[in-house]
Image (cartoon, rainbow, N blue to C red):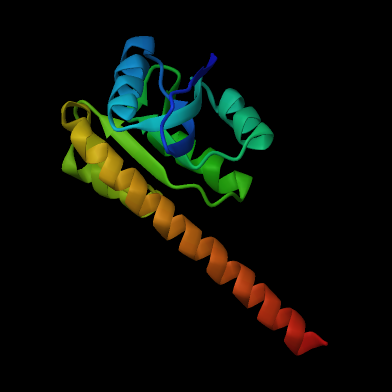
Length: 151
């Protein structure tokens, strides 16, 4: 499912949502709209759909449900890692144990947010977008320096 929520707002966001619940997706979009974001988003439910979405678009952020019948956050992190893309990955969970949270953070999740505390989402997105921009800029500068050294 793909949709576009456009409002006359100043902040834009390309979002990939890994979630099996349309209701949870709509709640998430309501929160983003309340936080004055113009969002282009796509929701996927399987590893194949996620691979295809990552191949076709380069999202600013991936927001992933912790666990659902055909896929999990841990599997989604593996798909992201295999893609070679540097996209912040945020896990949303209604319930997650401490051990599972630690495992996901070690696997590359940037943050874990409880579904009932979505007010934490926007500051997390802003932080992760800023950090991703810094990582991309650092890689660009390193490549430029390496290119200058090899000349």
